[in-house]
Image (cartoon, rainbow, N blue to C red; front, side, top):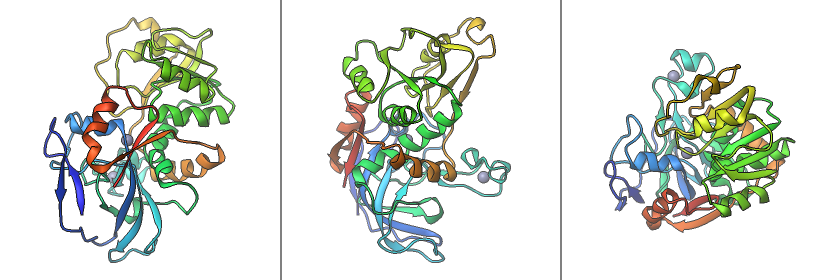
Length: 327
Ligand SMILES: [Zn+2]
Ligand SMILES: [Zn+2]
């Protein structure tokens, strides 16, 4: 197999030839057809997450077909198309797993971070965390759903029944969640970097009733806001934009420091919370809802050996929608 491998923090990925991996008990091997590039991959490259296992093959939005099945797998068959998400394994025994919060498991494995991911021709996954995808839809179009979509969905649920919803950062997750929110009958307000006209036009095209810079205030207060961009200064900006009792959800895995802000931005029962990882139920729910909502992902396809250039472009805000690697 071939894989783009990250040897250590803040290094460039390099193409490796390796022996094809053999799935162990409960595992499957997938021939990767498409792997989305997520902003989290930048945090892996930058060494900004705890417990990253180097050298690591990044990538946790994997679509492919099972080409080898390990012992004691009864849920999947050879040739099945599956999606492999960020959540790669949970212990099943810690208090969080037992209480239905496996996204907070004490002993998890994360695809493309603490176990090898999908910037490769083949990937190993725990069968219990591989979602059956059926045959509808294109592999490239589905790939971004597996993290931007799933964690985007979890953050939208966390935003509650907000009618007027702000989305800060209109990248891979923002553009998917906006479509679901519009389908649910919400009014979407898209916030982008100042002067990013292309992203603001993109937001309007996807049904946003308003689009502007993240330091602007909408014409009326929001009921809730979800922040996808990893910029801490968006927290006070979003708190300023929500009404009394409104909620601000931080959906990213990493964020720059939040600047201090006056208590009156939080006062009047505004809530600030974060979303971490996903549960398998989030995945099952969202993969059912996405086709009902008619979600269409905007993708740009790159070859596997272009992974470094793709990450550079993502960092520079030069990817509209989502980038997908095609091994
Ligand atoms: Zn656990
Ligand atoms: Zn991700």
